[in-house]
Length: 394
Image (tube, rainbow, N blue to C red; front, side, top):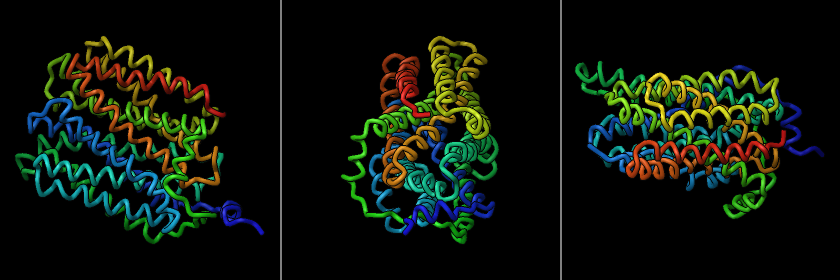
């Protein structure tokens, strides 16, 4: 008698009516990247140091360490789609809270809920896609999902700057208008996904936290886990540090320097879109290696660049290079252990805890020696990814 997983695989038929709601969820997944933009504005308003301000992105990604593996277990009980819907509810709540207050504690609560919601979403949404897409197309489909996610990330600094210059004198909402915009789309994602039928694989057995963590004893799974840590550390680090590099070296105000974050997300968006097609014709190992080398060159440029155009070029290279790291590493982990997708997904998303480790380290390094210290921390992550590229299976 064939297993349920085999039946799902054999009967898999994907329609646009299924793909579109899932891609709206990827858009909602990108809301977490507003933390870099928001933390810079909060830092300016409250007069915080770099290490204090970097606590915000660190707090957001701290929850990935706590909730990712339990979410893998939750999916085994209530299913992947229901888990995604639960995450969207938490995300919506996190985006509504800042509309009613702007104190330090209010932002801590908001970013905490945003991190929890995103941890649950990323753990459940990626394996949900595997119920719609065949394994050989998983990396390219997840890359397209990252493209959709990057659109939300790219819009955050633009919405914040527009709100700060236009909405403040008119409605008094200021840069926080981005929370209102994203809350609306979070509710829209819930309304689209709820009625969408998706056939899910049923787990053969329930899993516990220790069983999930034991997968880290598998060398390749551990390498993938560390790869995710470095990827998100570079992502959040660049998002947060790029404007600070420009402010430090060129003495520009945040409203102008914040465009650097937009440059990063523009090229990350372009990289995700083109990567979805490139990965259909190029081996993931080759494309991954090219991407990492591009980031390594960019980090070298950022150590000494003093021209805004050269800094923009380096930031764009990091954005393009980092855009396809996550889907390739995630797909490598899932395909390496296909019978434990929920558990592997929980571990991979737990690796987003790198968004806590890197900003904290970068904050202390930049307080000590300037933004060149933050660049040095990110460079260490790129060097690890170069090592990981040698271990990719195909």
